[in-house]
Length: 589
Ligand code: F6R
Image (cartoon, rainbow, N blue to C red; front, side):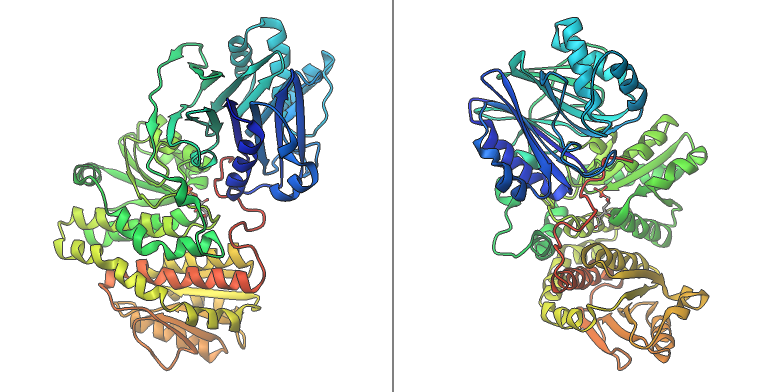
């Protein structure tokens, strides 16, 4: 989604803003721009394309000023054009604004402003904010009132930053249903959509809550609610370090993050036992449990539901957050919602959580980004501690969430043997990573196939869904994840000579049935790619994984699927870190 970033301080703003734009590339974007104020003049440079390409053309670094704002855009309203790129300026270039979110009432606001003589240069909903700020700043001659009035005019979701030529020592920001954090640096302050935008410069962070504005004048910072009440904020030190955001010797972030998993799995298990116990007690006490998440995180939710039912005999639902509101009437007053997320900023998820809270539900979460909106909405959060995940595809965050799910289940059951196995599972993941050459061989063989199927049963079904999602998003091959038992109900019709089918088949209760499924498909011409701890003649290609406790296979078998998607993408000359049309953090509904 759009990434926003601002800087005010003693240093030259353009290089800091430009680096910030590059840091935010992982959020996905189609255009970018910077505005600064120098000698009381607003300067705006923006265009479509990649940040480095735009810089080659426009030379962001030649801009001047100790204050500025920068934006990466992921188009929602209005096409991908230079005019629609941010920052947007007011009529007389007195105000420049960047925005993330969607302004729902922009048409009526625009009509009113046009009737008052404002003219618009873009087709975006965001430009409206610049004109409103200009109008209210002129009327009130007070920045706080201007921002509060502007925020109250807007319907929808927004995090915006603005700078004013009339006060070149001030950045204002406001947030409602979109993320905004402030980084407190030694030489100046940063405002941004997420911590990664400034982690190279400071790890001291102040989290704005929903419906708050910030007025940053030089080193002085004030925060108010939308009702104008001052708010005291605490500065938090975050554990992420600048080194976590480097690619090191890897060609892409995605492969670096896949290879980090032995370490990140260990890190996820560093939990405060009291918090884990508290989470488990809430599960035990709950009369109704709803698990909700999006995309890859939802696949973790499916495994949580399976394990709760199977091992702890606890019933729960797992619902995609984007579908949650359609079932909202069924949410019981005393329900427990378990929300799973890497970013903690996914708009559909936050909406689901707020629907549940409105109905009296209690929210617990499993997430990576400490201090994210989900964290602040949750009664209790367990963090997966996997560090920043820059590749757009979730990899290490998936296994981090999943190992926490196992930690909760085994703690709930007081299963000390399996808890010990869990602590050692990273070793099996390390073994699987050594199979990379075999995975590359498979990727080379099937890279041009138009359709892939991933098939699994029980705990392996969410991994089949995950394997298909990874391949689609990274390599753009069409792929489907299927339950083995469902093949006969339709999909078998699509199996032709040479169709690759990845069969998730470690030795557990599903083993024999999956072999039968594999032979049904092979009889119809499929090429069977077996992922198992045990070789079998039915497999045309075989990726061997180590033997582990039978409940823990999902943590291990997903790794070759991540590598398969990555290598297929590279072989097909896709950019695995920044897949087309996708954004890391989906902050609009
Ligand atoms: C897929 C992927 C997405 C995310 C989804 C939820 O690789 O990354 O499907 O899993 O957008 O994001 P979070 O977990 O941040 O809520």
